[in-house]
Amino acid sequence: MSFQQILNKINPKKFFLIDSIGALLSAFLLGVVLTRFEDTFGMPQKVLYWLSFMACVFSAYSFFCYIGIKGNWKPYLKIISVVNLLYCCLTMTLVIYFFQKLTVPGMLYFILEIIVVTILALIELKMASSPDGLSLET
Image (cartoon, rainbow, N blue to C red):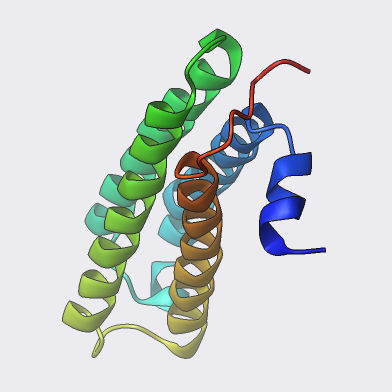
């Protein structure tokens, strides 16, 4: 079974829910856990709060897409996939900028987050760019 065949079997609406839950988890980890243990991770609290706020906005967007979109879902999925990729670029830039302050657990967290979000965003982008007529009907 090809990657495209697998994507064709997944209801695209679920990607909005997955994205929303993932962004909410990131917001919690960044805004609550990492900020409380700034010395353990090394990223400044102010930066973590901004990243957490951004993740909250992404979560809300994806959730409202999940509950509200009934028809043409592709442009909305493209938007969140591109925004997620830009978020990963921003996070990588911050990792490079604060490299001297980051600890090993901090580096591991941010690298893992970048990998997971990038994979999800690329799958979303692939699905949104699919030429066939996948629908959001369950």
